[in-house]
Length: 61
Image (cartoon, rainbow, N blue to C red; front, side):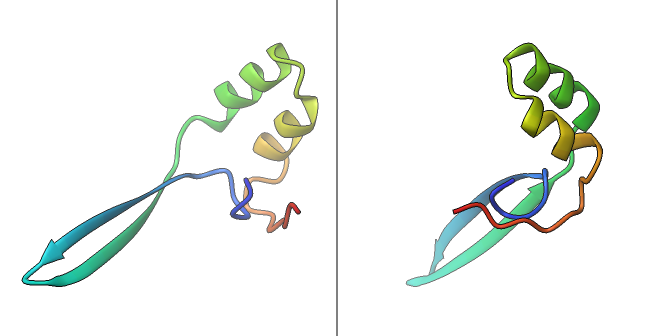
């Protein structure tokens, strides 16, 4: 969520012929299940953002 959406994010790096290539991937997942897990773990704040505003851009400092 620090990136502004609930998508899981990771990067793939490859050194091809001495040049680095980077691919950033944003993968969707079951936000409803993640929200339920957040509530179970006492994080109602995260639960709200996962299901109510999945595409809302937020900046967390």
